[in-house]
Length: 176
Image (cartoon, rainbow, N blue to C red; front, top):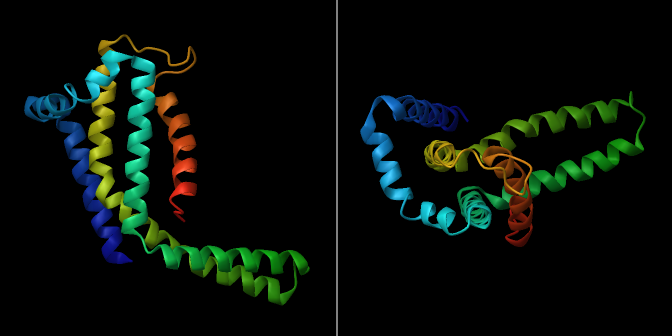
């Protein structure tokens, strides 16, 4: 647990470093824009709304694949199934029943295991997401911060679309 957590902290600090260098060191910004302007930028130029929906959809598909193949899906499924069974048994018992209290304690012991399993994909995806978000912020600023579907800016739209696409892809790919 400590090793994964330390690696995650390192990745996050590295991401913060890149984020802080974005405007101070032109090379960082130039490399990201050089890679993304001709690709993702072309999609946005074709049709800003549907291009953005497509970008978020592909991104969430890739993130879901990374999550599926960098986590122990069997262990996550077992923890989830055990949690469901315990929750059903707890509902049958009185709140102060010693057996219910013991089951709650067991559920709390499973949290660190679940947390450790869930951290691994973040190690691989944190830096690219930070750089992509910086690119989105620059790109949409140049485009006068458009409202998608007449409602929200790029971040709010990303948030809503990512939830929708994530639910779909997690269900289709059986990711726990």
